[in-house]
Image (cartoon, rainbow, N blue to C red; front, side):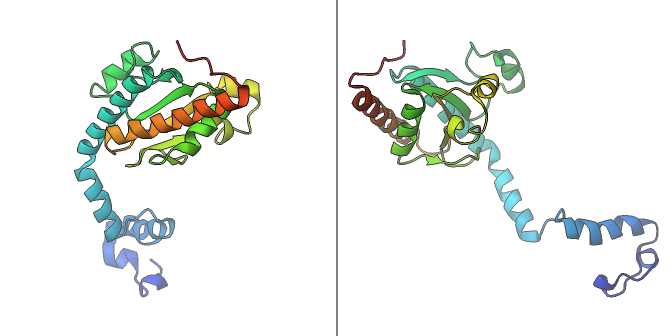
Length: 204
Protein backbone atom coordinates (compact mmCIF):
# COMPACT_ATOMS: atom_id res chain seq x y z
CA UNK A 1 0.00 0.00 0.00
CA UNK A 2 3.02 2.32 0.45
CA UNK A 3 4.38 4.30 -2.52
CA UNK A 4 7.29 2.58 -4.30
CA UNK A 5 9.64 5.39 -5.33
CA UNK A 6 11.76 3.52 -7.94
CA UNK A 7 8.53 3.06 -9.93
CA UNK A 8 7.49 6.72 -9.69
CA UNK A 9 5.66 6.33 -6.40
CA UNK A 10 3.31 3.61 -7.60
CA UNK A 11 1.05 1.99 -4.98
CA UNK A 12 0.82 -1.66 -5.98
CA UNK A 13 -2.48 -2.33 -4.21
CA UNK A 14 -4.19 0.62 -5.79
CA UNK A 15 -2.84 -0.21 -9.25
CA UNK A 16 -3.10 -4.02 -9.31
CA UNK A 17 -5.51 -5.00 -6.53
CA UNK A 18 -5.29 -8.76 -5.74
CA UNK A 19 -2.23 -9.04 -7.99
CA UNK A 20 -0.31 -6.44 -5.99
CA UNK A 21 2.07 -8.90 -4.29
CA UNK A 22 2.95 -10.68 -7.52
CA UNK A 23 3.65 -7.41 -9.29
CA UNK A 24 5.75 -6.12 -6.38
CA UNK A 25 7.85 -9.29 -6.46
CA UNK A 26 8.32 -8.96 -10.22
CA UNK A 27 9.06 -5.24 -10.14
CA UNK A 28 11.35 -5.31 -7.11
CA UNK A 29 12.76 -8.71 -6.14
CA UNK A 30 13.06 -10.26 -9.60
CA UNK A 31 14.51 -7.08 -11.03
CA UNK A 32 17.13 -6.80 -8.30
CA UNK A 33 18.06 -10.50 -8.39
CA UNK A 34 18.27 -10.63 -12.17
CA UNK A 35 15.64 -13.33 -12.67
CA UNK A 36 13.65 -11.18 -15.08
CA UNK A 37 15.13 -11.58 -18.56
CA UNK A 38 15.91 -8.61 -20.71
CA UNK A 39 14.27 -8.70 -24.16
CA UNK A 40 17.61 -9.34 -25.88
CA UNK A 41 18.49 -12.27 -23.60
CA UNK A 42 15.05 -13.78 -24.14
CA UNK A 43 15.57 -13.43 -27.90
CA UNK A 44 18.96 -15.15 -27.75
CA UNK A 45 17.61 -18.04 -25.67
CA UNK A 46 14.73 -18.52 -28.08
CA UNK A 47 17.11 -18.55 -31.02
CA UNK A 48 19.18 -21.24 -29.34
CA UNK A 49 16.17 -23.38 -28.47
CA UNK A 50 14.99 -23.39 -32.07
CA UNK A 51 18.11 -25.24 -33.22
CA UNK A 52 18.84 -27.23 -30.04
CA UNK A 53 17.59 -30.57 -31.36
CA UNK A 54 19.67 -30.26 -34.54
CA UNK A 55 22.78 -29.35 -32.61
CA UNK A 56 22.33 -32.23 -30.17
CA UNK A 57 22.04 -34.67 -33.09
CA UNK A 58 25.41 -33.47 -34.35
CA UNK A 59 26.94 -33.55 -30.86
CA UNK A 60 25.85 -37.17 -30.45
CA UNK A 61 26.94 -38.22 -33.95
CA UNK A 62 30.39 -36.68 -33.44
CA UNK A 63 30.70 -38.26 -30.00
CA UNK A 64 29.88 -41.75 -31.25
CA UNK A 65 32.32 -41.42 -34.14
CA UNK A 66 35.07 -40.15 -31.83
CA UNK A 67 34.46 -42.98 -29.35
CA UNK A 68 34.83 -45.57 -32.12
CA UNK A 69 38.03 -43.90 -33.29
CA UNK A 70 39.54 -43.65 -29.80
CA UNK A 71 38.79 -47.30 -29.04
CA UNK A 72 40.90 -48.31 -32.04
CA UNK A 73 43.86 -46.05 -31.24
CA UNK A 74 46.95 -47.68 -29.74
CA UNK A 75 47.70 -44.67 -27.54
CA UNK A 76 44.32 -44.86 -25.79
CA UNK A 77 44.07 -47.11 -22.73
CA UNK A 78 40.33 -46.91 -22.14
CA UNK A 79 37.21 -44.96 -23.14
CA UNK A 80 34.28 -44.15 -20.85
CA UNK A 81 30.81 -43.08 -22.05
CA UNK A 82 27.28 -44.24 -21.11
CA UNK A 83 26.59 -45.34 -24.69
CA UNK A 84 29.20 -48.09 -24.38
CA UNK A 85 27.72 -51.47 -23.53
CA UNK A 86 30.26 -52.14 -20.76
CA UNK A 87 29.39 -48.88 -18.97
CA UNK A 88 27.47 -49.56 -15.71
CA UNK A 89 24.89 -46.90 -16.59
CA UNK A 90 24.32 -48.12 -20.15
CA UNK A 91 20.90 -49.75 -19.52
CA UNK A 92 19.40 -46.65 -17.93
CA UNK A 93 21.14 -44.38 -20.46
CA UNK A 94 19.51 -46.28 -23.33
CA UNK A 95 16.16 -45.97 -21.59
CA UNK A 96 16.40 -42.25 -20.84
CA UNK A 97 18.46 -41.15 -23.86
CA UNK A 98 17.65 -43.51 -26.75
CA UNK A 99 19.17 -41.10 -29.29
CA UNK A 100 22.48 -40.94 -27.43
CA UNK A 101 23.74 -40.06 -23.96
CA UNK A 102 25.28 -36.69 -24.69
CA UNK A 103 28.65 -35.39 -25.79
CA UNK A 104 30.82 -35.79 -22.67
CA UNK A 105 33.33 -38.63 -22.65
CA UNK A 106 36.54 -39.54 -20.89
CA UNK A 107 39.49 -41.58 -22.04
CA UNK A 108 42.88 -42.63 -20.72
CA UNK A 109 46.01 -41.71 -22.66
CA UNK A 110 49.22 -43.75 -22.63
CA UNK A 111 51.83 -41.90 -20.58
CA UNK A 112 49.70 -40.90 -17.60
CA UNK A 113 49.82 -37.28 -16.46
CA UNK A 114 52.77 -36.37 -18.69
CA UNK A 115 51.12 -37.96 -21.69
CA UNK A 116 47.86 -36.16 -20.96
CA UNK A 117 49.57 -32.79 -20.65
CA UNK A 118 51.47 -33.31 -23.89
CA UNK A 119 48.28 -34.38 -25.67
CA UNK A 120 46.35 -31.28 -24.59
CA UNK A 121 49.21 -28.86 -25.30
CA UNK A 122 49.54 -30.17 -28.85
CA UNK A 123 45.90 -29.73 -29.84
CA UNK A 124 45.19 -27.04 -32.43
CA UNK A 125 41.40 -27.26 -32.80
CA UNK A 126 40.10 -28.30 -29.38
CA UNK A 127 40.33 -25.81 -26.50
CA UNK A 128 41.67 -26.55 -23.02
CA UNK A 129 38.67 -25.30 -21.02
CA UNK A 130 36.70 -26.56 -18.03
CA UNK A 131 33.18 -25.83 -19.25
CA UNK A 132 31.10 -28.32 -21.25
CA UNK A 133 28.30 -28.31 -23.82
CA UNK A 134 29.94 -25.76 -26.11
CA UNK A 135 29.76 -25.75 -29.90
CA UNK A 136 33.56 -26.12 -29.78
CA UNK A 137 35.34 -29.29 -28.70
CA UNK A 138 36.78 -28.79 -25.21
CA UNK A 139 39.34 -30.95 -23.40
CA UNK A 140 40.57 -31.06 -19.82
CA UNK A 141 42.98 -33.05 -17.65
CA UNK A 142 40.98 -33.26 -14.38
CA UNK A 143 43.90 -34.54 -12.30
CA UNK A 144 45.92 -31.35 -12.79
CA UNK A 145 43.05 -28.85 -12.91
CA UNK A 146 39.55 -29.34 -11.49
CA UNK A 147 40.58 -32.07 -9.03
CA UNK A 148 44.20 -31.06 -8.42
CA UNK A 149 43.65 -30.22 -4.74
CA UNK A 150 42.46 -33.72 -3.90
CA UNK A 151 44.73 -36.30 -2.32
CA UNK A 152 45.61 -39.37 -4.34
CA UNK A 153 43.10 -41.44 -2.36
CA UNK A 154 40.32 -38.87 -2.77
CA UNK A 155 41.05 -38.60 -6.47
CA UNK A 156 40.85 -42.36 -6.86
CA UNK A 157 37.58 -42.43 -4.91
CA UNK A 158 36.19 -39.82 -7.30
CA UNK A 159 37.16 -41.95 -10.29
CA UNK A 160 39.90 -39.58 -11.45
CA UNK A 161 43.04 -41.24 -12.79
CA UNK A 162 46.34 -39.67 -13.85
CA UNK A 163 45.76 -40.63 -17.47
CA UNK A 164 42.19 -39.28 -17.71
CA UNK A 165 41.24 -36.76 -20.38
CA UNK A 166 37.71 -35.33 -20.30
CA UNK A 167 36.23 -34.29 -23.63
CA UNK A 168 33.17 -32.22 -24.45
CA UNK A 169 32.69 -33.02 -28.13
CA UNK A 170 31.73 -30.03 -30.26
CA UNK A 171 30.07 -29.45 -33.61
CA UNK A 172 33.18 -29.25 -35.79
CA UNK A 173 33.69 -31.59 -38.72
CA UNK A 174 34.40 -34.99 -37.18
CA UNK A 175 37.44 -35.58 -39.37
CA UNK A 176 38.93 -32.31 -38.13
CA UNK A 177 38.40 -33.48 -34.54
CA UNK A 178 40.02 -36.86 -35.26
CA UNK A 179 42.97 -35.21 -36.98
CA UNK A 180 43.46 -32.90 -34.01
CA UNK A 181 43.36 -35.77 -31.54
CA UNK A 182 45.71 -37.81 -33.73
CA UNK A 183 48.21 -34.95 -33.56
CA UNK A 184 47.90 -34.73 -29.78
CA UNK A 185 48.37 -38.47 -29.31
CA UNK A 186 51.35 -38.47 -31.67
CA UNK A 187 53.06 -35.70 -29.69
CA UNK A 188 52.28 -37.46 -26.40
CA UNK A 189 53.85 -40.67 -27.70
CA UNK A 190 56.96 -38.80 -28.87
CA UNK A 191 57.34 -37.07 -25.50
CA UNK A 192 57.10 -40.31 -23.52
CA UNK A 193 59.56 -41.99 -25.88
CA UNK A 194 62.02 -39.11 -25.46
CA UNK A 195 61.73 -39.10 -21.67
CA UNK A 196 62.01 -42.85 -21.16
CA UNK A 197 64.21 -43.80 -24.09
CA UNK A 198 61.77 -46.43 -25.33
CA UNK A 199 58.36 -46.66 -26.93
CA UNK A 200 55.48 -46.47 -24.42
CA UNK A 201 53.47 -49.63 -23.93
CA UNK A 202 50.42 -49.41 -26.13
CA UNK A 203 46.91 -50.24 -25.02
CA UNK A 204 45.72 -53.79 -25.62
